[in-house]
Structure formats: C-alpha cells, structure tokens
Amino acid sequence: MAVSAYEVIATTTVGTATSAVNFSSISQAYTDLVAVVKANDSNGYLFVRFNSDSSSLYSRTYLSGNGSSASSARGTGEAQGYTTADTTTNFSNVGLLNIMNYSNTTTFKTFLGRENLPASSVQATIGLYRSTSAITTVSFLSPSATATIAIGSTFTLYGIKAA
Amino acid sequence: MAAYNLIATTTVGSGGAASIVFSGIPQTYTDLKVVVSVRSSDTSANTGNYDPLGLQFNSSNSGYTARELYGNGSAATSASLTTMTSFTGVTVARLTDGGINNSNSTASAFSSVDLYIPNYTSANNKSFSMDFVEEQNQTANYGGLVAGLWSNTAAITSVSLFLKDGNFVQYSSASLYGIKNS
Image (cartoon, rainbow over all chains, first blue to last red; front, side):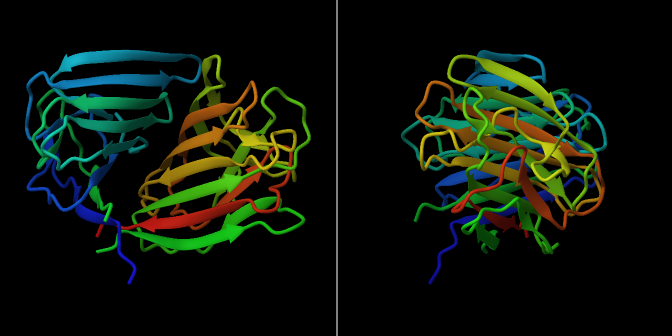
C-alpha cells in the first residue's frame, strides 16, 4: 500500500485581522515541516517563532535580489525568524518555510526559507534556531504586534514523513 | 490524509516538443507543484550553453513579471523579467535569463526546475516560486531563484512550458502535483 509522506497538519485563513497565526500542539509524528504563507501585512514581512520563544536564539544568512542587484547578509542573536508578506491586498507574496528534523531533542533546528515578492524581490534564507527542544508550535507574527495580518491571508502547515 | 497527489506526468518522445502542456487541471487542490527535467535542442553558442525557460498560464500571453536571482559560478546577479517570444513564436512569461541546458551542453545533462504555485484557484493575482539548475560540469553553469507573478485573477486551469530558442528534446519530462490543505 502506498504510504503518504506529505500530509496537511493544519491550515488557517484569516477571517479577522490579527497579530498572530499560531500552529500549536504540532504532531511529533513527522520528520520535517513545510509552511506555505500567502499573507497581507502592512509591515511587508512577518516574524516566525518556534515554541513561542522570543529569546535571541535565531540566526540567518540570506541571499536576495531586487531585479537589478544581488546581495547577501546575516543576522545573529535575533529573537525570531522571518517570512514574507505583501503590503497590498493582492497576496502576491509566496513564503515557503522548510523546517528540518523538528521533533528531535538533541540538535538545534535548521530551516530553509523562500521569501518571494515578485514586484520587488526574491530571497532565500538559511536559518538556525539554537534550541534542542522539539518544535511544538510555529507562530507567524505581526512585527508591530498589532492586528496587521489581513483578512484572507492563508497559512498552511504540512508534515513530511521519512518513514 | 494525503496532501500531495500526482495529477499528470509527461515525457517527451523522439522528435522533441515545442511545449509541455498540462491542461484541464482539477480545481480541487490548494497549490500546484511542477517538477521538471528538460533539455533544449537550441544550438546557440552562448556562455553557459543555455536556453531561457518560458511559461504560460491558461494560454495567456500577458501580465507576467518576475524577479530572478541567479549565479553562474563566479558572480550573483538579479534581473527583472517580463515576457519573451518562444521558439515557436508564442509570447510567454520569461522565467530565466540563463536557464535550461541546450545542445552545446555536456551530453545527457538535463536541467531541473521546481515550480510552486500556491492558491492557484483563488480570485487574486497568481504568484509563484521557482528554483532552477543548469549544471553541466563546465566553466559557466547557472542556478537560480525566481519570484513570479501573473497579474490575472482567473483560476489556473493550464500550465504550459516553453523554450526561447529550441524544442524540448526527447526524454525531457515534467510532472504536475496537486497539494491539498484539507
């Protein structure tokens, strides 16, 4: 019998503008997680936190292009990761987040992000969350901590099984 | 519950193909993913031995914009892309400056493309994310990332792939997957 390796864990379509979308009590039965984000937020980006942890355990290196030049930079000791959001109601962003080996309790957690805003930029991010705790919650947060994540924004979390 | 299902797959036969087309796409999924392994018959002797990749949704020839970020082994570059004319004279979205191995590339080297289209049935404009690899074990090779937008609110019912200067050669293949969030 064929075994499904890619399953939906949860999905949310924002019905009332909010400051946070949380996927909590994430099943530990998968190997990796994939999040797909199509969001409108006036800040133009969203924070990503694991286990509601806002301590300075996140770092990232990213490569980006704006249509005329390419650049790379780093962030260390940050309080969150990041993903993209559109500032218009066109929801033209594509945010993809791959979180590897999220349930293990012996290693730090790595993640790969794609942050696409076709009108302005394309970006790839490698990230690290320096915690050995299993990830049980993934949160997408308004950077201004206000209800700027607009109605119609969609967030889906998938689980991928290695076996 | 399975979230990831094969909708269709195609392999180009002898004689090649001017396009690879997935039509009549079911509207029952949330996202689409297209996984591609292709090579071009183009004989252009450009640095990198490439042929740009193109795309149409719903056979539309307008409304496409993209930001591309790519590297060739010595430098990283970003470009803004709109449309181009395909080998067969069709106006299509231009997805890459470099792109797909052509006939001057190392023998048997095919390029890989991963195209992700979220919310393809929504009433908003359609954006997509793409990664591509054109590796041939020579001095100049290309790999890149693309953020693309089709400024059209129609649900996507077909996805067509094209090349700028050649046909897809035999053994080129593409698979369309549907991803469901419920």
